[in-house]
Length: 286
Ligand SMILES: Nc1nc(=O)c2c([nH]1)NC[C@@H]1CN(c3ccc(C(=O)N[C@@H](CCC(=O)O)C(=O)O)cc3)CN21
Ligand SMILES: CC(C)C(=O)C(=O)O
Ligand SMILES: [Mg+2]
Image (cartoon, rainbow, N blue to C red; front, side, top):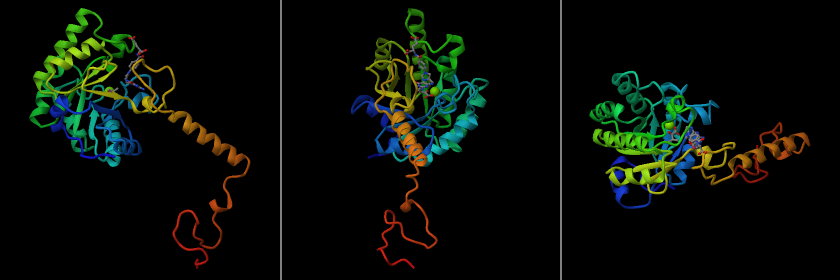
């Protein structure tokens, strides 16, 4: 259960003391309720919705209107975790003005409390501009899934000296521009450690090793609802996929052998209290 609602002013504190931050993706209200009940710190409405929910091969087709729609649904079920929304592909790359308008929509129309943006030094101007509108930004560096075509697939980043230097430069530029946290994706643990050491704000890692100030995973991956093969950094903490599949096959069997619906699951012609669901004593029906 959520104790104190999570807010961004607690980030510097959680960097220094307390347990590592937990962030999990959510795309709808029922999932938001689960995160809230489990005491997760941050709900991320990720553009991974394109892959995980829409069934696409990458995140590029996701639109700002889809992100607003999903962020609203999450907001409606959320009680406690901080609400962060991803800026999708082409919602901020064309101009700072467009980025400003779209980040503002996620806050104003959808109820996000911060936005997350893939990019390094090239988005520093936008981060500063959003800061002037008091919109908190999480910078997302390392593997940036929107670069899938440039990378030729989803590839671990920062493994050679030049790439490592570039990611460190990006981290420094974002920190200078005033990000409230850094999300580090698919980089060697030693680089995750180095950025965490130089950063005054929390780092949250996904495939960035054990030294970051928090960890994030995609909901469907961590509950065991994503088909194999999974990236190396995923741990399936549950078996939600097989639990739901089992419920579905039980339903199919029960319908086919006519054990469902049973009499107590069936309406008579008279109004009758259901023995399971109402407190009305038996025999007092009108
Ligand atoms: N379900 C899901 N989980 C995610 O973590 C996730 C998404 N979707 N969609 C958006 C991005 C894309 N992500 C990905 C996708 C694939 C790999 C992957 O295949 N990694 C390989 C390593 C590749 C290499 O060695 O360079 C692996 O085996 O870990 C990693 C991150 C992370 N994000
Ligand atoms: C994987 C996380 C960090 C993300 O950006 C997303 O879910 O879109
Ligand atoms: Mg994303």
